[in-house]
Image (cartoon, rainbow, N blue to C red; front, top):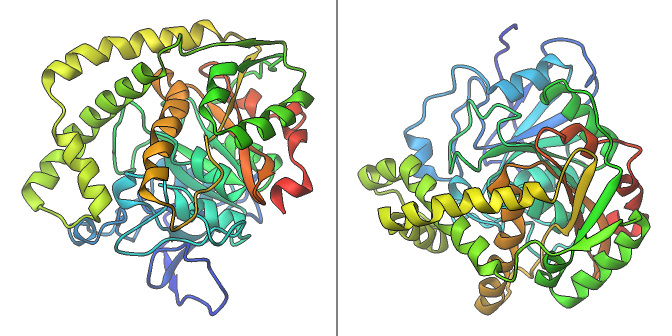
Length: 404
């Protein structure tokens, strides 16, 4: 594939909602014609773009980075399919957050509800799409970092099967959960991007949908009621319970195994460099550092059993229906108690696909308090393309109210 040098252009005076990393915006034209001709995209600043350093949302990380010698394979594939890169986007520091805050570079503005959080850690990518600044955008999703902002800003978001899309050229976070996902304002564009990035496979349509009752119980009442109402249009075949009365077990398993992966990956750099983190992110990394070998030994096999439980509820042609996030986007000045309630609910929900490495699509299905809320379908491993079908029942859930 031809190598194209990036072009840095001065930011225009048009509002960019704070979606892009500070400084001149990197642009790269397509390297070939293809199915994405005429489309523009943005890339989360955890993902390599040739000729520019990957900043990871942290100035001390950025200081140690040389310009990337080549783009990540996902970026190269999109350029080779005819798309044009129009900027790199803000991320929570090294991907550690679901809020969209960055103590160094600011918080992107949620175009759907400006007084509320955009969601993270792929905040800038979600905002760039929601604001119409690009047609689609790449993010990363470990514990909900594409799915949560998709719900908060009111766009489609997709987390693929683990390892279905290469994570080469991406700053690793917790590799056994890490994925490269993407956002779009419509399912047709989401599908076109998937056709470029996903392995070629015959599509087994999802013909049976199972509503996960105890996942809806994790959402606050108004969000649960809205999404239950919207899901009535999906012809749900049955309702199941997944957490076996122990959602706390799913959360603790995720906390331990994810944090163990984070510290193994980033701990050596943090210990040697002593970087400056925002207060909340510093506390999260300290928690990751505290995970003991005994905890890892205890919870690693639990993850395998939880993954097996999820997969037993699935099969070819079956999808699980869950809320994408437990809350509508929280207010930017929400009390600490709201975040203390939000995170356990959200991470338990997102751990369903995370523990088992499953694909998940988030659809902007409704509104609560005037702001978007997302409904998700989780599929079997490798059945990504079935979730992206433009003729699927969930594609038709989107209303003008959901994306207004």
